[in-house]
Image 1 (cartoon, rainbow, N blue to C red):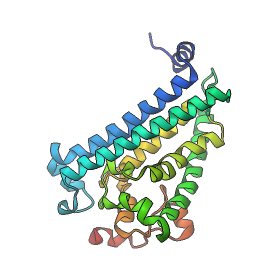
Image 2: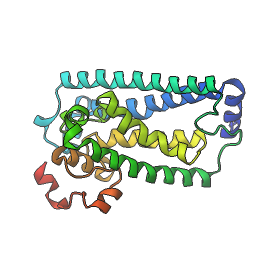
Image 3: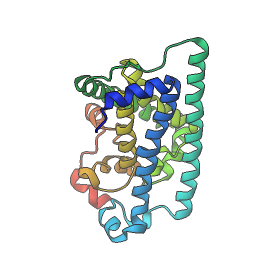
Image 4: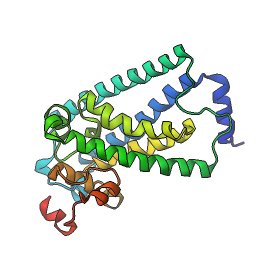
Length: 254
């Protein structure tokens, strides 16, 4: 007999506190949608070298070495530990002060209409926040100390999506994703869906492959050109005319 999502959610609420559900649910999504996705992308050159070479956006001689990938892993793991500690601190502060959870924990799951609406709104809010914050860290006065380490991976690899100083990780990796669901007061399950989409997106965006209709091409160009393609979707780049125009020249430039 199949068990409905509503039944699973009801049982989860009966067995665990919202704080525990929020912490373990969020970190499980981080593990599967970012770490696992990154591992798949990074393993392709070793498991399927011909397939990988055929789909890589930049030449093999430009790719990071195994030692650089190991260093990237250590930095990203550090950011993961620190961000989990930050989440625990916020949850603990909420419990001490009696504040309600950051997201809704309604016993009834949100409708499909509500989920779609909230995810679209979150994507739009994140696009605006991420664009302005990304352009901010490219300002010469702070680029060297905050954002330059991230650009040391050119071309990028999936795991390097979270390769950064912890300050930048909070500024660009946490705030633009965590804030939109809080603003619109979404259900925690909607937040998890949005988070899963964004984590898979950022891993794919940095993967350096032409999969998903060349989705990674825009951010690959950002790591090459530095002054184009700041936003996740391209909407704000279109508004501010920072989208890379010469699409026909992309392959030649890479």
